[in-house]
Length: 261
Image (cartoon, rainbow, N blue to C red; front, side, top):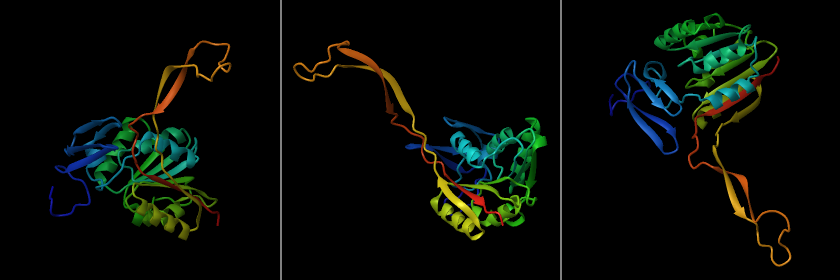
């Protein structure tokens, strides 16, 4: 790791700063085969960090749930995805579209593509997924006019919008792009509009946890003759207050629809 030269991709030996929420940041030394346990789950250095661009974000269950709903995924859907990354979104998509659907996932980095292919076979979901090791921005998804939905999780999604249009079925389909920075969202929306996509919308999921407890308060003093005749002087009730610590920003989810030509 150099503090002078600029590096775009994380490699073994680098120090990565993990942002786990507001006020929670952890520095880890990236080592092949190592794992880091966080409150959001386990980060595997070999597949979740090494080879990923600095500033990368990992999708959490709330983001995955939203994209599954907004892309209208169901058993039998054909989906194109890039990049594969750790495969967490891929597994969620496969569980949704099985047993009659199929996922075409494209990963730029050879090591991650091979690792994902191995894990799909180990988890017995290989029949529902095709893994391609190529640059989606240059070579596309390897299929044309078959996809019901496209999901992009890459640094420059606007460069793949044209290939997404070609991969989606002729009668239309949905696209979702995940980006951590609003500048990426702006460029992606411009590309989507230029290619003829409609119904553009960008959403951010920020779950809020509440502390629910039972409390008792005295009956209010309403003055002479106004005090309620019935009931005890105090009664328990359930109260909910927001937790001080909330889940921080993960990324923006931009959705659009392919307008039938």
